[in-house]
Length: 414
Ligand SMILES: Nc1nc2c(c(=O)[nH]1)N[C@H]1C(S)=C(S)[C@@H](COP(=O)(O)O)O[C@H]1N2
Ligand SMILES: [Mo]
Image (cartoon, rainbow, N blue to C red; front, side, top):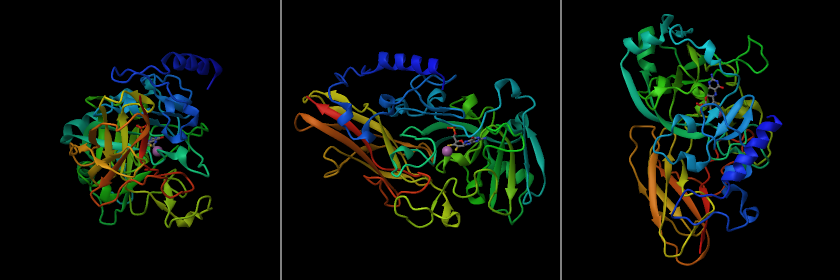
């Protein structure tokens, strides 16, 4: 990041700092942020940001080459995430907008386990196959990485490398059926039109995929629209895969080719240790041999409080509404609870049913505090397999994936 950018963002940050948009809440400056546990500070409080084209100015930009940006929790308050608030995780350099021509963009399906090899234009995909719209949650496998100790290399995501949008496209399974897949197919892999950071045209930044079982689910889409509009450039325009509930790294952007494989796909960042966790739990700091690292499939159960912002102050006689979203990888969230006494007791939240399988669910509650003072609001989701979020960090792993610890807000009651 260059200096000008940082200076401008600091100025903008100072201007916005401490101002709450909530009439209910009377301020956010009333306690010393330095003394609060680090993990309950909003990332927008302690990070420098600058604006990305097409993205909300409050997005936290972690890196500009490649571009990586996440939303502070309060920006994710909408039921469905707007394109300008949808996190960006790039491994390489996206194709430039000038280089993308939707009239000539094609998608090729091939591979050793494809019966035929076929190429479709965008128009052919749209006209030949039935179109579907699903709300699907994407979360980067490394969301929450910044908490792990010893720290893991990679983007130090806080909470906001997750989002849920309404995606429109065609079912991957319909397109695969049109091409024909052999009985030995076990995996699909994607290839996109972004380029490697090194500039080496023979290298790809990333080429991952999913087991054939996931590829053939109804909700697995080849999508060209997010919330009824073209995909944002940074989120894969004009075409991408969307596999809700799996690490978002499986959902290839700027999609140009899908390969049907008779082995686990071996594209860039498929090999260990990328997007893998130790097959058996290890103690923090352990060096795990690659052969003992297993590919992440479903993401774990998790939730995020999107209202109010951490640091909010409320009067004793006011009720505090809280709300947010909960998701559970390829399962469903069955129960949602909050605690204002550090997990000693838990109260139920209202929880909505998902709009469709793999959509995040909305929760809300109204909190009455018993006396003035400092509180933390903790939120905990439980999936329909009985598993809840841990209150502390889950198992350490070398690459810092799958942190689904409870989200915590600091609240002062005066
Ligand atoms: N072609 C391509 N696809 C990609 C990536 C990428 O860098 N290039 N990043 C992956 C990773 S690691 C994640 S988390 C998601 C992020 O999707 P988003 O940027 O739309 O949020 O895209 C995945 N698909
Ligand atoms: Mo990711």
